[in-house]
Length: 108
Image (tube, rainbow, N blue to C red; front, side, top):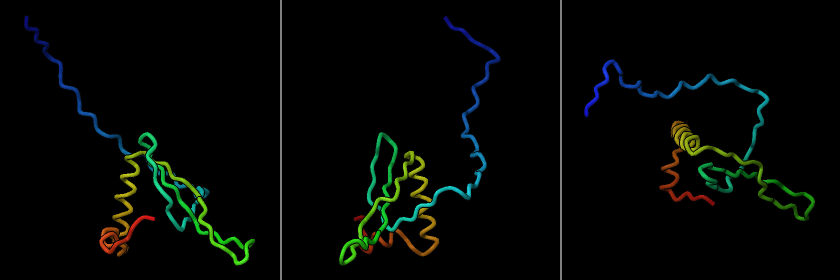
C-alpha cells in the first residue's frame, strides 16, 4: 500500500546559532604562568595545568620551585579553537610553532 502526503515540505536545515556578543569583565582574574606542566583528557574535557617559577628565600641558598598556579578546563571544541587561534597568533608574531618543533623544541 502506498501513501502520498501532499503539502509537507522538507525540514529546514539546522544552522549554528550566531555567537552572542562578548561582555568584557575588567575584574576577571588574570593568571601569569612561566610554564606549562601538563594536559589531561577527562571524559572529553581537556585540562591544561599551568605553573610559575617561584623563588623560596627561606632556604639558603634560595631555591626556585615550580608551583601550580592554575588549571584551564576546556571542551574539546574550545581546546581545538584555542590551538588554532594561538598558532595563528604566534605565526603573525613571528613565533612559528611549526618552526620551533622543526628546530627540536619539546614539551617538558
